[in-house]
Every structure is written in C-alpha cells, then in structure tokens.
Length: 351
Image 1: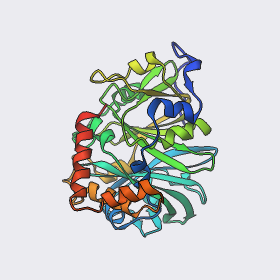
Image 2: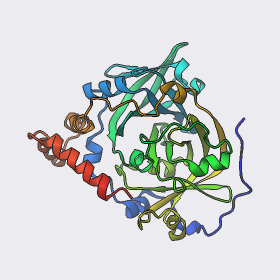
Image 3: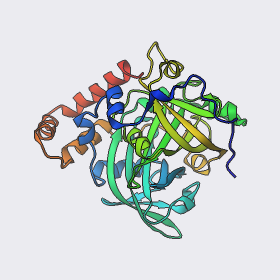
C-alpha cells in the first residue's frame, strides 16, 4: 500500500500570492515556446524513431486520464518494445505495473538510449490491452534535449550495490525525476528532470519541491498543472534498480526564497514546483533490473541531431516560420549545425 509521509502541510515561507495559476503568468516567467520546439513534434514514428525504439532497453511510462495519472517502467533486452508507424506495443510481462494500462487512457513515455543524453518521447492513447501486450496508438513523437540526463550524470553512474534503503535518504540522494501530467482531455505527458545529488528535490514539511531548469521549453507539463493539478512522478538514483513513485497535487511558484534553495553554479531557476497530498512508495524495479542500464553498455550508432532534424522536416505545421525553418534544415551541413547548437547549450545553459 502507498505510504503517506510527513506531517500536516507546512507552508513555511511560501506565499499563496506567488502561485502561478494561468498560462499568461507562466509565460511571463519562462517565455513562450519557440517555434522550432513545436516543429520537432510529428504524429507518427518515422524511420529514425523506429530505430531509436529498437535500440532502447528501457522506458519510463505513464498512464492516465483527466482524473489522474501514474508512472511505471518497462525494461528488457534491446528492442523489447515493438512498433509500427502508428502503433507502439509493449510486452505486459516487462512492465513493473501493467495494471495501469486500460483501454482509452492516455499514454506518455521516455525512451533513453545507453550513453546518449537525449531521449525520445512518444505519447498517445492505449487502444487495447491483451494478455501479452499493450497496444498504443501514437499521437506524438519528438526528441528531448540531453540536459536532464547530463545534470543527473545518468549514464556515468556506477552500479550501486547498496542504494539507500531509507525512504528519506533515497529521496535526498535522487538525481533524476520523471514528471507525469495530463491535460483536461486526458492526454498524458512525461517530462524528464535532472539535478546533482541534494538538489533534485527538497522537502518543506510534507510538501516536496523541485525546480524547473533550462530545457526544451515546451512546458506541456506546466500547462497541464494549471488545468489538472493531479500529478505523478518517478525518482531514481542512477546506478540503482530501486525507484520511488509518488503522486499528489502540484502547483507552481516564482517565490524567491523557494527558488533560491535550488541555486546551482550561481544560477537560480525561474520556477519551482511543489507537490502536496503526497502518496509515496519505494520498491525494486524489475524493469530496471532487466534493462541492466549501468554500467552503460556502449553508445548505439545513432545521431540524435539527425533524428530530430528529420522530425522538423516531417512536421506538417503550415505558416511562413515553419516553411523557413524546414528550408533552413534542408541545406547541407544542417545536422552538424544543430549538433553544435545542442553542444553549446549543454556547455553554457545547463542551469
């Protein structure tokens, strides 16, 4: 059974007037999503995405609807998930909690590849749950930048023979968080977050806080929190097969005192997210054990920049800006330029 931890909510220095309640307030703090970030989303699995899925030994998944969402994981040998252009199929036996999958619920996922910091995100809706597999209709596919995995040292972590067995100690040492949200229509989203040890999450009374760092600026999860604040998350210590799963009610703030707790390299995040009404469990993940992620078994022969560039070229968005962006990526050397842009971001805008 889930374990609820902490005393009654302690609001400490948090000012309710600082709570972010509208998209306009959110965009005033972090800006609007740049057009290229929207253009990299396609509505199917192209050749690059299918190859990516075929190389992945592990995924973080979320299943939910407008009433709430939960996170689980699946893992096995490389290519354990099968896919076509419009459908993704997951073996039920390889999920930690296959019971979360029900026909017509929203689905979101993160596909990491060993040694590669970028991830592939695939969203859609469950169409069928068979005795041996779960079938998902693909609605969105796009790449996510590598900042979360870089900040968490995700692939450089050694295997941990004795990870913290105490819940509080494990949470204090966690460096990676996958945040699951849904919108008012029940569409699911799963966003990766990463930070150095001691900076991923903080507790204030019974409220858990984490920060928003620079990333792809799609902010789907934050828009979702405004309309549907019930969220879920998985917390990991890279190198460990143990996982903490939680659920609760989220809100966002730009309160200076809260944000200051998450300053790294003299950089303070623009936004912090708090989760109340927490239900928390810790367990061994069969999926992580099956995937054998650590130590990372070499780097697959795939170029994330090329995959992401093809997604932008395949996007069907109309308008002058979209046409100009697509044309710019069609010139020789565009993939190399995109790769250099990502490397510059990872070096100079990690926090």
